[in-house]
Image 1 (cartoon, rainbow, N blue to C red):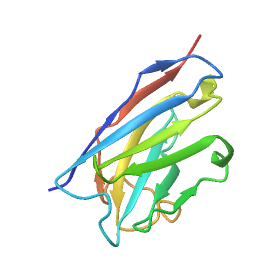
Image 2: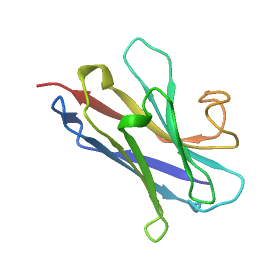
Image 3: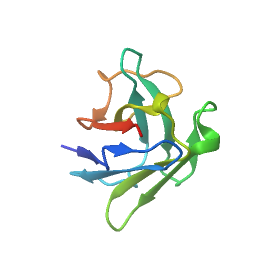
Length: 125
């Protein structure tokens, strides 16, 4: 069974870059027919998708975050990375990585796919 584990600095200052890693075990980040996604849930708000990587390695980003987002995968280490630049306190959220059977742009639900437990990302001076 695939397992995903997010990790990151926890706290970053405004204008800095939030860099997160998702370590995958029990499955490959090059698996066909799945979408490897990053999502987040700000306090008191709904879950929203940030971006995803498809088996070809192509990346797709949420229009609202596209200008500040960069995702990648390391096939040798079997992990995913997320960089979110120029952060503000509004970027404070629990960040999740997930393996999904569909694009997160279609529907976002923690009842579908495999999810990590999430990691807190706080932006504060």
